[in-house]
Structure formats: structure tokens, C-alpha cells
Amino acid sequence: MEFQTEEQLVESVRRGDTDAFEELYHRYKRHIFTFCLKLTGDRSLAEDATHDTFLKMYQNVGTLTDTSVFRSWLFTIARNEVFKMLRKHHRNGTVDAESVWTDETPLTFAQTNETKAIVMACIDSLKVEYREVLLLREYEQHTYEEIAAITGSTESSVKSRLFKARKALAEKLKPYFKL
Image (cartoon, rainbow, N blue to C red; front, side, top):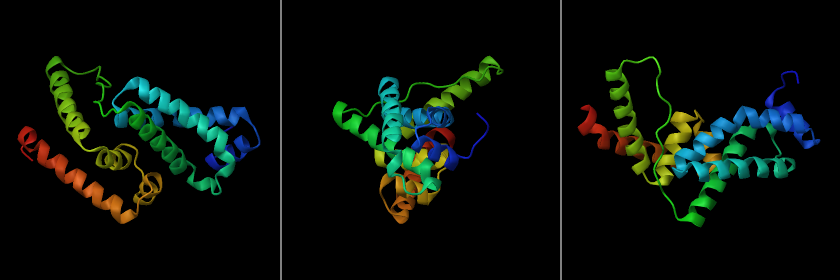
């Protein structure tokens, strides 16, 4: 399949083009899975939420009125699936350790992993409504407007929660990093 814009792919999926769906899946599966994993802290739940997200996307793509907001719409679906699963499983776990740098010395490797573990543990300890805006902004690079659409909040609410999340995170990290 030749390269197509996101909007073209969405339109193709609407017409039943499974290759276009597969292309969108491959473009977004890692981002959606990572977002779900960081919110749930559980690989199995994240995999289920990712699967359900793409299933719902496929089933409901016809309801998307503005294809230019597809990315935000997809993350909204993912968010809803995560919260549905968290309610179902009554979970608020921690994130597994992620990638490892392969070209580091043992000392820098240990320091990097320790730093990462400390930061992730602090992020994981945030209430989910603060953690989600922080993850969407800092890890997924969404705009305030997109985050507001994903979370069903106002931009000012998103900015407020993001400010509080960053402030709380900085406060919690002070003893470790002399901020």
C-alpha cells in the first residue's frame, strides 16, 4: 500500500478497506499499548484495552465526523477502555520496567535504571486523573485541546491537573534529585 495520510486511511476504513485498518493499527498500536500500560500498570490489561480500542475504532469509525481528530478520538477510546477495565478489575497497579539501554557501562546502566524506576514509581503513585494528563502531554505529545477532548474535560481543567501533577511530581522527586 502506498503511503496515505491518516485522513485518507480513515476514509478507506469507512469503506471497508482492511489494509487501511491494518495500516492504522500498525501506526498506533505501540502508542496505544504504552498509554494503556502506563495507566493500568498491567501488561495483560493493557493488551486487552489495546485490542478493545482497535475493535471499537473499527466498529465506530463511521461515527467520526471529523477525520482530522482521529488521533485524539482513538486515544479517547483507549482511555475509556482502560477506565472500564480498571473499574471492572478494581486495579491501580504499577508499571513494569521497560526498555534497557544496550550500550551503557554497568554503572551508568544501574544509575539509569534506578533513576527511571524512581521517576516511574513517582508517576505511578499519582492519582490516575493526574497521571493520564501527564502521560498524554509528556509521553504522547498531545496538545491541551487534544487532551481535553480525550478526557472529556476543559482545557483549563487539563492545564490545572497537569500543573498539579508536575508540581506534585517535582515535590516527590526532590529528595532523590535535589530539585
